[in-house]
Image (cartoon, rainbow, N blue to C red; front, top):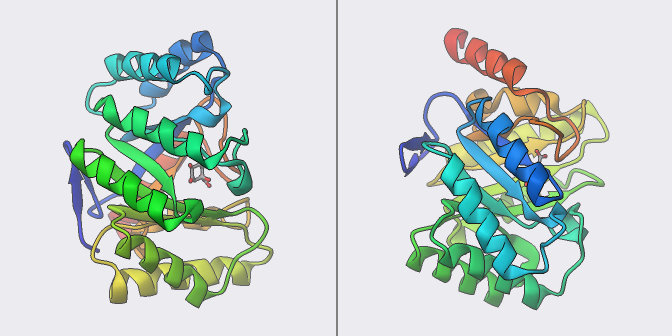
Length: 253
Ligand SMILES: O=C1C[C@@](O)(C(=O)O)C[C@@H](O)[C@@H]1O
């Protein structure tokens, strides 16, 4: 897998990087949570802004970014608004989604921004451009909380993200069986060995898919989400146990 350095963090090499979501809904909760999450020593902290009560106030969101940034040191900050149709908390017009992401990027205080592939190609291109102008890396994403698409479809979506300029293509899908988990893992390995020229992140959600959150180093996923105060998707496990599993697989593979 090709590697990508974001600050001091190198994705696509060694242990998959641990990403921990911030799920607080109020400013007070987030101020407390950022310190708790930092103590877990994640590589990346994901602020899930779609659960924030002031998500519709851009100035307040920008202030919160400054606050979070001031607590973090080497940990990277990922800004994510997960849309309602992809499993997020709040429904907003696409124009607001784009405006919010642009405003977050322009603070230059985030390291990474999540851009959903199915926002629409013109918007996606605009967001990638703004991110590049401001030194922010794009994790392009797609989520299916209902099912696991075919291997070919998973690869097609990841490849499309790469074509659109994602620094890190990412997909999270829901398995209905162990076979679905194997489909995701196979797609990951094929994408990594045959098509990807950059790190990718793939997830099979829920308990059935847990192996995909642990074994990214074997199959080709460069990062994995661990639970902090709260899970942000089914199947995330506490960071200390996640780290232990990643280290075992790294040491003996
Ligand atoms: O895209 C993802 C992955 C995720 O859905 C998971 O399954 O761990 C969790 C989300 O917070 C994140 O934005």
